[in-house]
Length: 452
Image: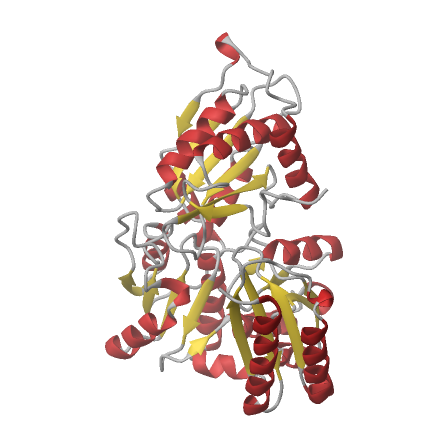
C-alpha cells in the first residue's frame, strides 16, 4: 500500500484545506493514539508546534482525537522540532507530534510524528496510521468515564531543551569573544536559540524573534541567507546563523557574509571527526543532492560517503542501519546521532562553533576544506507527477546530458516530496555547460507535461 496522506516528512499542505484540516487532524490523533498504545497502562503523547497562526486550530483537533482514544497529551507549545523529539524521549512519552510546515510559508502547516525513542516513524507505521483513518477500523473505539484522556501543559519544556543543548557543548569551552548574527525566522526557536548562545557567552544579534503567526519564514531564516550576510557585514560579526521555521536545519555565513551551506558544514565537522577518530566507520551519510565536492573532501581526509534518497529521515534510517553517527543534507539538516535523534539546527551550530573555538580559525578558513563543483538547480512547478520513464523525449535529453558530463558530473531529476515541484539538478566542471543542459531538460519537461 502506498502512502496517500503522508509525504516524505509527515502530512503537509495549506492549513484548512485537505489534508491539513481539523477533521483529518482529529482522525490522525485518534489513529496515532491507537497505534502507540501497547498495554493497559496510561499512555502519553507529546504535542509541540511552531509559531503559525493555524497551529492553535490543528493542535486543538489533535488533542481532541488523542484524548478521545484514552491517551493523555503533554503540550509543550512552540518548540523546535528536535526539541519535541528530545522531550518525547526524555519524558518517556509513547510518541511525539510536531505541528509545523518547516520552511514553508505561514499559510501551510504539517503534522509529523516521533516514536518514543525520538526517531521519525518508518513508512510502514505511517501506512498503518493511514489504514486506520481510511478503514474506519477504530470508529467504534470510544473510551468513556475516567478512561478518556487528559491534556497537560509542560511549563518548563523550553528550559529543559536549553539545558540539553548546552550540555552538548564541551564544558571546557565557551563562546566568549564571538559576535554572532542569529536569524530565528520568527519560528519555533525564537526563545531557545538566543538563550543558548548568550548563556554560553556569545554576543548575539538576534533577528526573526518576533513571531506574529504570519511572519514565519517571511523573507528571513535559512531560505534567505542574504539577511544574515548583510547583518554580519554591518555589525562586523564573526559569523551568521540562520534557522528555518522549526529549527531542524541551519545555514551559515562566514565573517565576510559568504554562504556556508550544509555540505560545507558536513565537510568541516566530518573531517574534524575523522581526525579525532570519532566518525564511526569513517563514513558520512548524505543524500543524492550533496555536492560531489563533499565526497572528494571526505576521500582526501581518509573517509567515505554513502548517499541516500532526499529527506533527513532516510539519512537517519541509513545511519541506524549501518551504525554511523553523522549525516545530513545540503539544505542544512544535520544529524549528530551521538547527541540527538533528528536534525537539530541549534545543536549543529554548536558543533561548528566548537570547531571554531578549538581551532582558533575563522569560518571562512575552515570552509576551505571543501571545494564545491559547479551546480545548478531548477524547480519546475507541475500539475501532475508523471513518471519520467514514460516521457521518451525527456528521457532522451537526460541521457544526452549524462553522456556529455561523463564521470566529471552528474544529473539528478526528482519530484519534491512536499511540494508540486520537479527538481532538476546538474553538477559538472563547467558552469555554463551545466546551465545549458539543465535548461534543455527543463524545456523538454515543460513541453511533455506542461508547467504551472
